Image 1 (cartoon, chains in turn red, purple):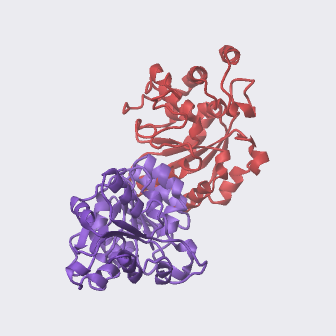
Image 2 (cartoon, rainbow over the protein chains, first blue to last red; image 1 turned 120 degrees about the vertical axis):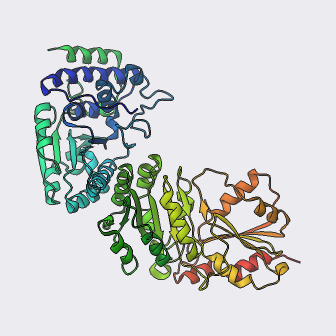
Image 3 (spheres, rainbow over the protein chains, first blue to last red; image 1 turned 90 degrees about the horizontal axis):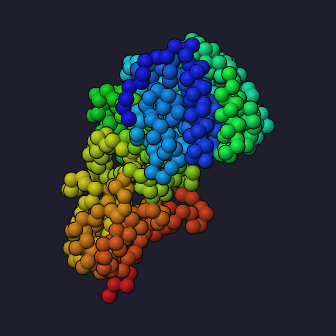
Length: 265
Length: 306
């Protein structure tokens, strides 16, 4: 898949498009009877904002939190880079749309990810090569918050702080919930920003569901970590901040209830 | 081999896409390369997982990176980064591990690499390169530089002070023909075996083959017809490697021979056996403990001969 990215969308039009994408994301997961919705819903606003408004021709995006693959596929669908027939293969036998991104089929997915702690350092490598070769373009990477428990993430942070690369932006989906507890309960991870700054990289905080604020913060601070304060399961009240929606698929009744809620003005 | 390796890389320094990352190793060895590459020589610090992933990202951005460390820190510490970031994504990154087998001797077991190419040749698309002689480095480095898929180069120490008379480099080489069995070797022990037997009469010495590349093409390996012919008429087949048996040259070759319906003579396999006594010493001391020294290998091959 080598289709170019469509022209940048005005921010005023973005919330409506995100609503459509959120519905399509739920439908895709419902039809394929697959869970992992919580972390997809928390990441959808930033994925849409980056791909529809912030990123330009030479920019690249790497999804380090590979379990949000569904949100990335739906974002590519909203750009016209994937069709409904593609989304219908999500998780199916013979698919390219696996639960975590697989390699080799889309220039918009430069790396297979899914094991946490890989996306940040590979994004760093892309940014380093571009910097040393004097090539243009920003590299954006979206990590989860639980992912900052991986040692490789901190190795990358040390290397990045030493190299001071401005052509890399690392975004963290701070939804506060990980696989088997809150990030606060599991590893006292509510101080990521202060820890990042102690390593010598600036950190900025923003409401991860305010597309205007996300766009402004990301563009104003290249070469920094952007902490996106988000809600796991965002947009569906019975999923919001609920541990089980890291995993559960939707029943018929739950799908109907979720759609009804998204349809409300 | 580090000097030959460094010299071979310096010859390629003009290539603008060539980047060299080291995990803070190479002091008093790689300085000529550092001078030749300038900002393209990158000390990535003591952080091997990050170093391998960064190299993957660089390769994706069009660079041709090399990654260097002591062997176990190159293949074992960042194994998932090799598997996922390099192999799943099919990226041309060249891993270089210094000190194959027991090379680091009495530095201790953490610094030994006894299962590197077995583990790595199980990965999809990754080819391992096992130089036996200093002269192998120049052609090998050029082959790695041209390769678009992941590679691993295992450096050791050549056992020949004078390397004249070697056949030109290839993945499979016959160093000598002989009537006293066939020995197939991976790595520098080939030099010791050759030196010890090359002056014997042809009927009294073993045929000696060196295998220098494994993996990357999927099993079974393509064994040259000349070697198959030699094995078919030999009284014994010796397999020699400074690597544990699982996944090594011996198992890979026997697998290919079995699938090909090859009739086998008596087979002996000299390989690394870890630390049988729980004590540690020089590389030669460990080889001796495992039956990997040249006299032991030749004794095993001729045992039972009338």
